View (cartoon, rainbow, N blue to C red):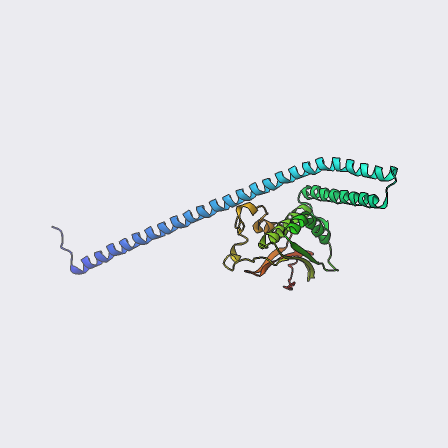
Length: 292
């Protein structure tokens, strides 16, 4: 015959069962928490892969555009040289009055300007294979301004240059840096929605580096959007205007040069994008200088 358990033994057994039940519940909670964490990691990795894939597609698109541009530039340069040769031959072999000589000089000047535009396009597409070269930033800025000058003029956008007289040359990957500059200049133009404004391009020598600042008098960036502007694929542009590198890729390029990009913007008042580049491996100190 089994001994009947005492009240204390029953109470102890109940406590043991409750303890086991609580442990099982905690284990279930830990298991669910682990499952949720793993699920979240999978989601994050999937989104990261999507962003990387999108960036690669964008880079491939830019490469295809560059090859097409090179082909077109070569095709147009040949007849241009023919036109230039004919005008020079007319000037050399015929006596022209002052008016026609002035017109022929103007035509030759325009031929040279078109040739420089084509050369700029060809240089833009030359891949440097990531090799850094001693670069005159002012010269590179001027070349990129040539590429956007027509659109700026059409949109009644004025360009102001405030170049530092003592700006040193830097070791940069030319084609990559040109792409960043062109993207920022395009963004600045697109920000001037009323098609009348000013874009100021300024350079400054800093402690241990240089700054390139592009400021527009456009619509600015909403305060809620500022934390998102370096996110891949984030844009405030319409589908028609989504043709730039995007700040996320531009940031990656500048970070690869040991630099940084800073954005200061007020909705309705304009935006200043500052590219900070080091002279060496030391971090660059910005003066946060503002330009009118």
